[in-house]
Amino acid sequence: MELARAVLPKNGVYVLLSTDKDRISPVLDAARCFVLVSASPDGAQIRKQMLIPDADPIAKARRIVAVGAGVLICGAISWLLEALLTSSGMRVIPNTCGEVKAVLAAHLSGALTEQAFLLPGCPGRRHRRRHRGGRGWRSEW
Image (cartoon, rainbow, N blue to C red):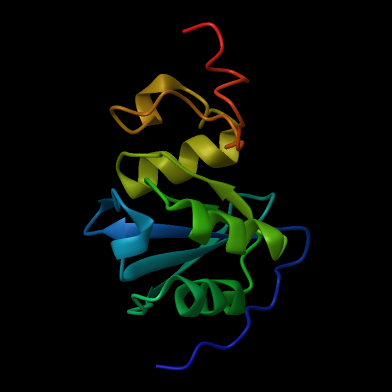
């Protein structure tokens, strides 16, 4: 199935969510099913389900970027795939879990930062950084 680039709704945003049935997929790199949501300020939402079966991270990143969403909400994500997506200008919100409807509502209301939507075992929603010599945020360990 070939994906056409989405046309951005007036004063709205496209949000792409990796899914496994009605929940956020726990690992984006293995996810095949996605929901594209067109969310506008008046609360209207248009949902479109799509399949992105690529296993190769570069091919998967190309297909995800081609969808045209500005935001991707997902579970765990490899460093490479996250770097490819963010370098294309996409905002990636990783380490997310929960039912798709609840996660989307929380994102649109600005409440996605709550611990209830944090994937178990993840330390938080901080940006990944490479450190040399064990310095950085781990220096206090």
